[in-house]
Each structure stands twice: as C-alpha cells, then as structure tokens.
Length: 181
Image 1 (tube, one colour):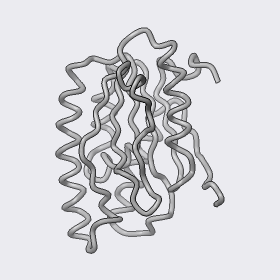
Image 2 (cartoon, one colour):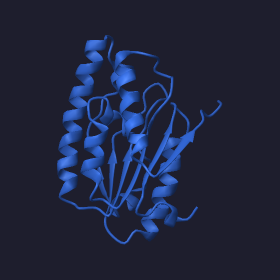
Image 3 (cartoon, helix red, strand yellow):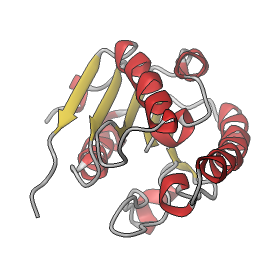
C-alpha cells in the first residue's frame, strides 16, 4: 500500500461493528505519517471498548508524539442509553465535546486529518458541515460505522443517512465486511 494512494484525497472506510475499520485506518495512517509533509492530526471519536464494540486507535506513545491527537470523552449512546430519549441526550453531549475538539483542531492547520469513528459525530452533526470544515485539509482519512448491528431506529436511520452523504463526498470509499469470529 502506497501513501500516494491517500495523499490529497478524502478516503472513508466503512463497515459494520468489528469489521476491522480501525486497524485498516491505522495501517494507512502509519503510511501517511511517513510521507505527509505537513502536520498530521487525529480526531479519535471512538468510545472506549464496551461489549467488544468501539475502541480508540491504538497508537504507540512515540506515534502520539508525532501528531496532534484529540480524543474527547465519548459515551456510546446505543450501548449506554436505555431509551431513545436517553440515547439522543448522550449523542448531544458527545456532539458538544466533539465540536470543542474541532475548534481546537482548526488552530493546528493540519495537512492530514484522520478521524476514527466519524459516525459518532454524525449522530447529531451534519456530514456536509464536516466536509466543509475539512475542505482546507488536503488529506482526509476517516472510518465509521455503516452496518446493521444496531438495528433500525430513527437514531440509526439518521446516522445512516448522514453516512451516505459523507460517502458521496469522498473520492475513495472502502466497504469492509464483518470479520467472522
């Protein structure tokens, strides 16, 4: 895999829960760290692993020193909330913390931005706004949930609709099948 395939492009990796999105993102990110000429930022929106779902991007301490790393506190709405109202309230809290990280990230002016679990932003955020925000960043690498694990609810349908808009805005999209366990 050559980093040239990802430089100056918007790349999105999508799949269901436990399909290897984060691992694939990490491989590409490590290549970009060797060839990107400007600052690299990571916005890690994945919650801590809960019930085998989620998980931060596993960077070494040395790798974290080479990038601007932002990881707001994220509560997994559907794994934590018991009602649709509770799920929405948790998503709104996540969205506020993500917006703060985006504001701080803007000051860093990265040449490359990797977003782990962009779907957490899309629970309350808008795909077009995110793309507009990232327009000035030459290389954008993202991954996000796009599957059936969480079932069909108004919350999941909104997330899926926003993810489909994001898919349409990217030059490269990789769909990962679930990993059999």
